[in-house]
Amino acid sequence: MADVTLEKVGKTYGNHRIISDFSVTIQDGECFTFLGPSGCGKTVILRLIAGFERLTDGRIFIGDQLVSDAQDNIHLPPEARKIGMVFQDYAVWPHKSVYENIVYPLHMQKIEAAEAKKRTLAAIHLVNLIGLETRMPFQLSGGQQQRVALARALVSRPRVMLLDEPLSNLDANLREEMRFEITTLQKQTGVTILYVTHDQEVALAISDRLAVMDKAGRIRQIGPPDDIYEKPIDPFVFKFMGISNFIPLEYRNGQVFIRESDALLGCPVPHGCLDRLQSHELIAGCRPYDIELIHQEGHGQGTIQRVIYLGATIDYRVAVGGKILRVQQDVRDAGQGGIPFRAGDPVGLKFRDLKWFENRGADAEGES
Picture 1: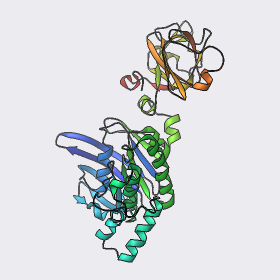
Picture 2: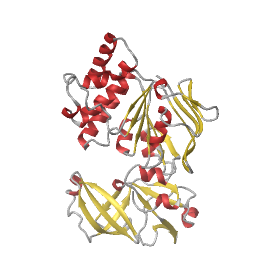
Picture 3: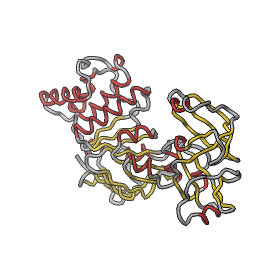
Picture 4: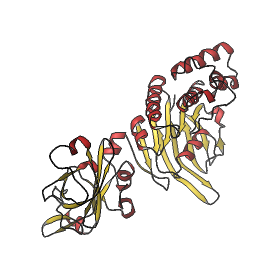
């Protein structure tokens, strides 16, 4: 297996710069995810690593091997990089059986027949396709076709596996199942996995580390999933990682209010931040489940604008001054403690876990 290192990588198509000065190291044997919005360059990065695209700037190493160098015009072809790739649309051969699809890379590498059969059957076992060897792709479910693609990528024993949104065409239950499959495969094989997605749940579930990218193709934060989610570095990361509220505040008459309202914040402000609140340099953020709705007045007065039943949760939109906050409550909790909230009800708000950010304008506008 191998690390993957990108040094000051850049890619331009004509006059359009996709990524620039992009540097990151993926460690040997980890599952690393590039997470970002559509069009941020995630797939381009995978294609550069795979050798399907040439660099405009920078260098790429797989292990100790220099596979791409724009300045010295080094570009190893994909077949020389020992990578496996799984695409969004599976890309299985429609005229070949499960076994024939999976063994195909070994035939291309001219692996001896007995060894090819042994490795193919092992890959079939690894992805839980035993008994389906003779089936054609049209006889398989989407999840089974994706397993064929995974086995085909693994059978040649790659140093690195590149996965480009491989679960996006599956339904919700299959996506959840395949997340566990990929995690299990990674642990069993020890292969280095680079995964690309815009799906925060998938990234959080499978990654050892992940990199959050913005629309301009820049990395905003790298870290383990719990750090990214619990300790976002800026409003963009906080907003991208889930439903978010940004709460503009102001300090007046010795107290902190939600801006343009008489609603008191009712929880501590970081030491030394009151002046920055006054100049609008600081903004608070919280998740919908970090706000408690209370029937009595105090802690920030608001009005229920909308109530939406979502099965396990109830989603509220609450107007506070000129701001709409999103609040979520477990449906079991909503049925306890008296009368449930309805549209038009006046409510108090109690904030449990606020995060504090530099106010960067567009990154902290509206809801996620």
